[in-house]
Image (cartoon, rainbow over all chains, first blue to last red):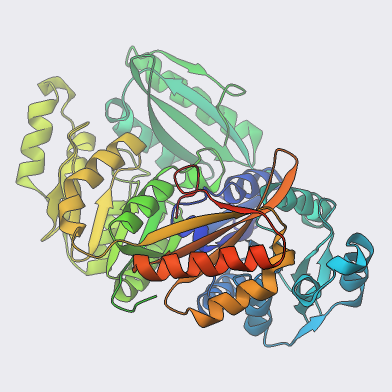
Length: 255
Length: 255
């Protein structure tokens, strides 16, 4: 794959994911959307609500990747520590953002405004707000780090507001071939096809369904003509071995 | 929480998770099971099928935590690189394990045995096999690293075979209080309860359902009596503010 592709890491923050209480929906959503925008997700991390751990992961990832996305930990309670961790990672103060405070005061009735809720207006100095069309309390961006909410509906709405900042790269494309044979039957010729085409990446994923054992071969890249050429080689590889195959894009054959 | 608790990291390996093609089911499963066994999952990482990246994450995590669990990347195809990465991380050779080879040769008809399938018998020198009651090709353990398959049914079956090696710690317990008020209404008194009880960890998770906005407060710890005392303080906190609450363990109120 080309080195010009933009890269990203996704940090999912919250003890509830690490205890198994809550099943994360944000990483799958962000991963799929970023790939569509031509941003390659290189790594995901699931982190506890602990400032030092978050700071360390943030600093490792923001130095290494073009973008870092975090979800979770920006609510009003004591276990919401993401904003403070981001401020520490950047070595700046946490400050109350006047526009964020204005939005919170306009949204909540006066008797509901308290210091805990106003904490949601605290952002690292220099951060820009990310709009929250669902429940007002904003996310923020500082440098190459985008800080989103943990509630999936809110994370998605926030992502839509930053999507225009992320567009412009050539999208990552993929095509899927369903092969009616187990992986081990085609592993050797498959490796040869991959070796001849370093410009695409071929993933091999076994499946077991309707009593059948088979393999989905996923060809990923940026040049549709090269992907098509590789798909034809894979179809020919199957034909030569008497193995049935069919293209299945559009029916569960995502990237 | 006590420092005597055993800790773990979970590494989920596979490009298909990072493109959003496949939704990981192994981390939630392992996280929940490990918590039940009294092993605290401190971190999860989602990694691409790239040896250098996996080696770096393995070495960071195996030095830091009592156990490391990996899932994915131990099949027969070119994109299955986990065993080689683990060998490099430990600085040992990858060797063909005679018992693993025997099992594969006993399982597949002779004409189906090929070098790609036998690759599934290659493990880091010194590793012990982890049985695979579903599809034979084993996982393995070396040092504090447990290497499991990516297919959820196989990962679960392998985990059952190693469960006895992990038992013995005091389990992590949790109780959940459903509070019929948004987080921001109780954040301040909640922080006071947490500050008085450092021996438990209180998580606060908003919910929106049946048209209601509310908060699940989850009290986690190892001492049932202390958890009960904190639950009573939280109930009293609600009562004093005229807020309804109820215990919901057993109905979606997991750890």
